Length: 120
Image (cartoon, rainbow, N blue to C red):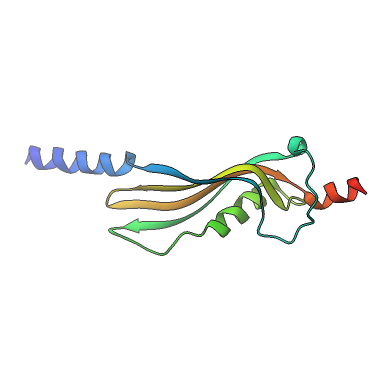
């Protein structure tokens, strides 16, 4: 009986700590919102990370969205931000029999509207 419990504990431990992440792409500017085209220095931006995840319990329950991960990152920066610059999009999967499958977007949030207004 002890061997079965040890095996079950080992499987549970593996499923909790297993996971991988692979970058999909790097980007210079990305947004899911209507923005103006001017881009200034990102020095005034805020570094943020956004995720969109779906649960995995033996099978994947849905499909994570890159667009939702971008929206999450911009929303985390706060009001007034509408784009991300100098970032990376990664696919992150953290499951064995259960866990989650995610898109993760990291970048510097900027307000391109205020940059365009300042350039005038």
